Length: 251
Image: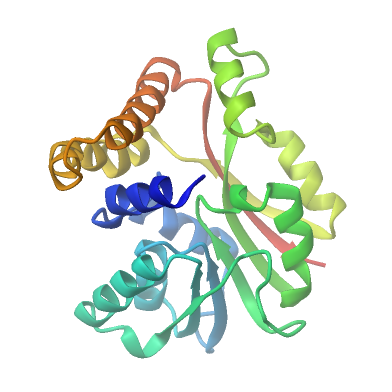
């Protein structure tokens, strides 16, 4: 991806509350399944935090010291502004770095949280590499694109094989988690509203302004077309895949 493509994607997604499928109810459900101790302060890292939808909600619900990690300074700038507006800026520290090279100490965190972002490093790579940052008994909470059925239409299979070959069924993801030294404590998948209402519709509503800001350029139109293809596939084949949310404990 060249610099222009990256800047266009930042421009398209920055103004949205979420940069991927998710929801407040679902984040709350993951927190509940994780069984986190609300009676004591927790150290949490939100990896691939975007503009802060999860980090801000966690800050409101827990007595936590949160490090919000992203490699895009524009997203972190918006996160800081939103955290201040919500009165939780004292609980969140932002860190610009790659998720492949996070500068943390071994066993530093009670919780590693990552919604819709672990694919950037790869599911198995992230589950394996991040484990050392967790305290014994610490919790890993990640969402990952997941097949919901054993068989898929060829069109859908071909699309995701090209976009993210590591997509797989939940049983395979759970096997990966267990093989790398975690105990699975919970799993669920995101319902349709997390995709349509919370992510795709706000994104679509901004297409016109995005094209206008970028002079209706060919590259901007291509960016929108890629998004439209993805949205159309989800609307057609949403029974076959979603984001799975995996809650696991480090042994």
